[in-house]
Length: 135
Image (cartoon, rainbow, N blue to C red):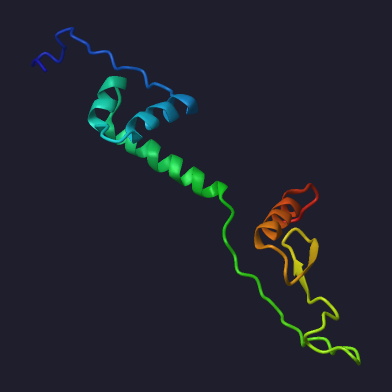
């Protein structure tokens, strides 16, 4: 600065901060995720800092993690087996073993022990997604 306290009259305009839509961010992050992509080139092509790309990637991963329901363990109580009626042996199908599952949504599922695991998974997922479920 000159001794008089005046500037030379040269001013530099600061660029306004750009705003990116979620779709634009996703498209740019997809470019960055292509095998062999060079982050510096992706950033240069879009006129943004590499650090911003890494920030977007971190933010996207954090948002995706919030969407996944946490895995929880639930208590299981095993009751004593039912006594077989007179005249039935353990090799004779008398009463089917019933499994009762209390879901987080407040509903109860009762199935036989021989249910297909994939079918049970679909049933539970459907019941948990129905309206009126409590968390």
